[in-house]
Image (cartoon, rainbow, N blue to C red; front, side):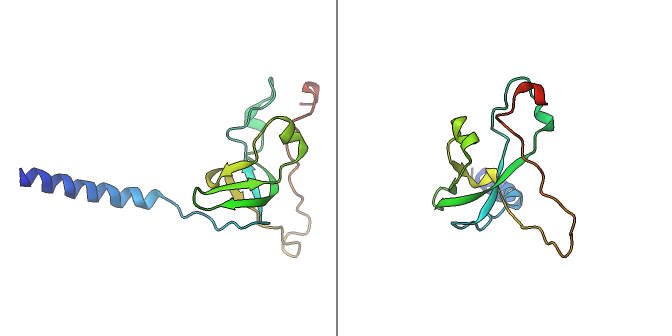
Length: 123
């Protein structure tokens, strides 16, 4: 019986070692930082091609941080509020914003966000 227990404990330690390698540290996000929001769970208007939608929209400002549960409240634009999207998101749906360096990339423009309120004919 002890041999079986030792093998189970050894295997559990082995599995935990490789599971821990896959987990990432949570990015350090603070109030008033800018973040991008994932469109993974957002419902797109009917008839729109979801594969053409940006993976992240924003950047939006963090208004409240809840580090105990890794949730953050964002200041969302009215077009997302009208779609009844709640303003609290888990850190896994957020991506930190890095501002453009105009000295290195002078002609780079910010990608135009997907217009959730556009009529169906505009796509």
